[in-house]
Amino acid sequence: MNMTSDNTARLLIDASYLLVAFLFIMGLKQMSSPVTAKRGILWAGAGMVIATAVSFAYPGMSNYILILAAIGVGSAIAWVTGKRVAMTDMPQMIALYNGMGGGAAAAIGAVELFSGEVHDTVALTLAVVGSVIGCVSFSGSLIAFGKLQGLIKKSYRFGGQQFFNILLVLGIIACGALVAMGGASTAITSTLFGLALLLGLTMTLPIGGADMPVVISLYNALTGLAVAFEGFVLQNAAMIIAGTVVGSAGTLLTQLMAKAMNRSLGNVLFSGFGDTGGATSTQAVTGSMKAIEANDVGVMMAFAQKVIVVPGYGMAVAQAQHKVWELTQLLQDRSVTVKFAIHPVAGRMPGHMNVLLAEAGVPYDIIADIDEINAEFETADVALIIGANDVVNPVARTDKSSPIYGMPILNADKAKNVIVIKRGQGAGFSGIENALFYLDNTRMLYGDGQAAVAQLIHSVKALG
Amino acid sequence: MTGMLALYIFMLAAFTGYEVIARVPVILHTPLMSGSNFVHGIVLVGAMVALGHAHGPLELTIGFIGVVLGAGNAVGGYVVTERMLEMFKSSGQNKNKGAH
Image 1 (cartoon, each protein chain N blue to C red):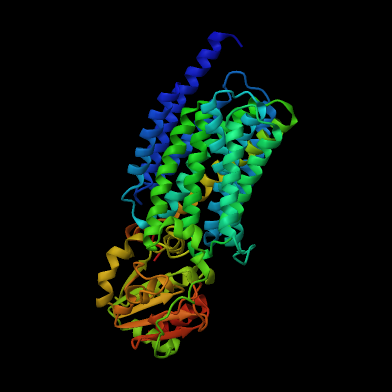
Image 2: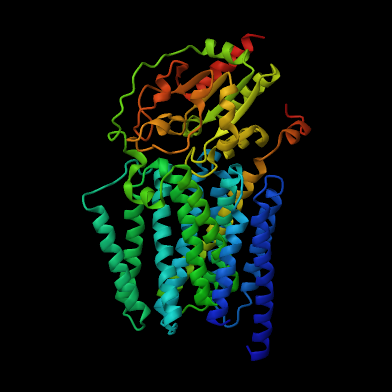
């Protein structure tokens, strides 16, 4: 190719990338309102198609058949899995696709570093940083996927784990510095990647399921950053802009999640609280749990004026969202006001409950978040808790020794009657006793979430 | 593109990301996270360029894996985001459909 056509191609690519960046940012902006959100993803999608198409025109490219084959393979796998996945399994799929992005960023870094064609120290440093972040995001997201999918059941911890992680980080810094100075051997570069992948594993393995919203959101932000850094190396403006926008947006979202749990990000990553705790709580819970029959709950709800439903991860596990909506409609027909109260960290990813309720057909205007709904519990006749636990535990307000002390909770205990649908009498995933279950106005409806709601539907229908 | 110019882009994009996401209702946290997950699928473009300039079996293999992963990120991210957003409806829309 001669110089002129190279320049023309460059101009075409740069001009297209400007349009792509515009489409991405506008797309994300539109995604921040339920009314325009659908248009948003279409805009961003168009941007991606344009970016991919013009990138074939990059000067000096070869291996076109390999590129097309790789795009075909990756797209086919992702298309099929993405179309098939159940809404309840959405958190792990997002973790998986996110990990793929991190892996791709690391692969770019690897090709650049192994090729030995990058000599500028700044570019080398950015390639190293991007690769390390990409590797951590890749292996970490895969572990998150494994945990959410139920492939990894336990949270692995061993003595001196923090110390081991610190050693890993020091090793990565040492290898990274050697590579960034230029002329490092293939062995050192390989070690760098190996250590970074290992760090992602050891960082994520100890984190419990309840902390997954924060973790998924964090790795999403990290992948964005990795993409931006590799974009610097490749001098690719579209990658820098898109990666950085996602990096900062993801960081903000991660902070929101952590704040909703009243914990710092460091605490989530390093305390391993997500599925231990409990043992530290000193304040004994007094009283007893009082069971109730489904028929009695049905009557109570049918003649209520206002019912607030509080869904949690248990609703997702039981796939009860469709039944819950059926029950809601029956109650609405009897002119009962029904609202849904969503805690920011209910479920396994940010906004998990909203997605499930939307899948069942619940309109978003009767779904309220914690700030909107908390004052309304006092006027509610029934608060129906389905598979939620820590997010309604009043201990968070009162017991300073509890691990969840200070976490903003839904004030379900303020409702006139509290009905808790629960599988058995055990404590929730965090192992913390829930004082709500022992209150005088609380009744326990034992059973599988879906079956219990089906019984409620039956008993409300029986009233005619 | 000079390094300094790239830094300017970096800074402005960081503020943009923050402003775009701030004040988003909880209801959209998942689609938004999923949508931003899709947007960093732009890594595909970089992986294509890396594979396009790769020489030798090691670079070609890593580059190939990179493009597969990047394409997976972009396509998967799009499909799940689109599916989720498809479901969000207000009471009015539900009634218009005559669903219930």
